[in-house]
Image (cartoon, rainbow, N blue to C red; front, side, top):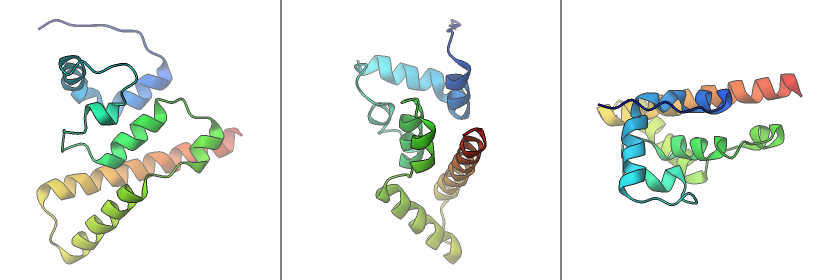
Length: 125
């Protein structure tokens, strides 16, 4: 197996860290599908069911290099919010599948990440 080294900003490295283990697969998908540079990561990876839509929304948001104001105003889509509500309802009922438990974990991690980003933005601003 070949090894590829690329130079990226520290900011981008931090943004990619949560999916570091998936980068070879995602790059393969991008190259294999001939994705243009204008195509978003969400569109390129939409067929990968283990990546919740909210995660892709956050990734797409972060790669735009948002301003502090953008970070403070960011919210996931209403579809992602509805999915989270559905998962929480199922969790309260104790009827989550293993995949849904993993998805709910991702939502919790994203919420924590966004809270920290917003707090750091407010402290630095």
